Length: 242
Image (cartoon, rainbow, N blue to C red; front, side, top):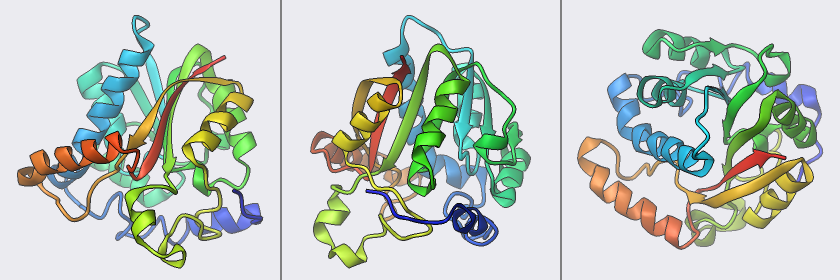
């Protein structure tokens, strides 16, 4: 499902919502808090991606919509990948550079100059793009032959959507969220865009009700349960460039 929204409306949002200090990717404030909320997720994502790619070893990675930059940081410092990011909002890009010392290009993907990446990751971005066809083509063109796209987007069939009334869900709120994909829909869309999906599941971004280092065992247990039932908050796909 896609909403009819003007491109200028979408890009103007970055001057407001994504620049705000309370935006969720930088609201935590400290590296320790970000690790507690995001660390497990990004290590799982990277480990799963490398397992799918094996025996091929990635050299470079671009994270599109890198937010606080922690995925870029972990990819470089713990997985030995030359990782950079693209983040159109100035405040998160500045936060990522200053907090984690990572290379973040403060622009939209279509203005980025790099190409030939082994991996391009993009989490919770495609639902904001006014032209997902062009977005995926741009990613496809920037990947090296046989490179991998790692993508996630909101799952309209997650646990929250089943417990809430339709009007209480934030999946389709133009001009913020303007695209909505089921798991089957996203897989088909990727295939039609020149990708071969090799792995997919649902995955939870983080659970607001149980934050902090002490809650990690409980968080992992709940996340794995949601994943097993297909009720995780995001549809998560690893796909090879055809």
